[in-house]
Image (cartoon, rainbow, N blue to C red; front, side, top):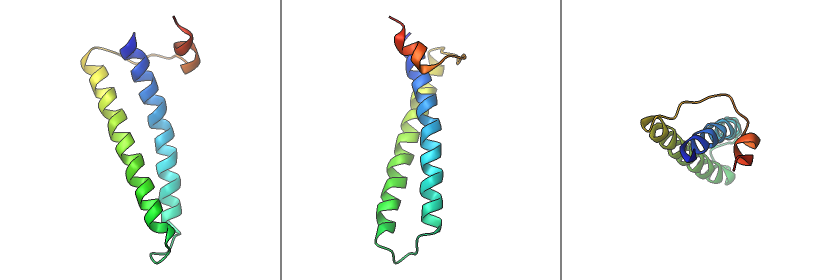
Length: 81
């Protein structure tokens, strides 16, 4: 059960990280190279990419132990005791 919850959470987190990466990428595309905020955006993008790699590793580990995705809401999974 723990692997199933971890896999479901990793899928949800990856969805959110995709949105954040897209937003940061769009922001970087319009931020001039000389803008001091550019370094902050590059750091943010790198941090989000590291999180994405970690959630991908979690998904790969869950596949190795035999967890297969199925339709469920996070709320339902978290309410299971």
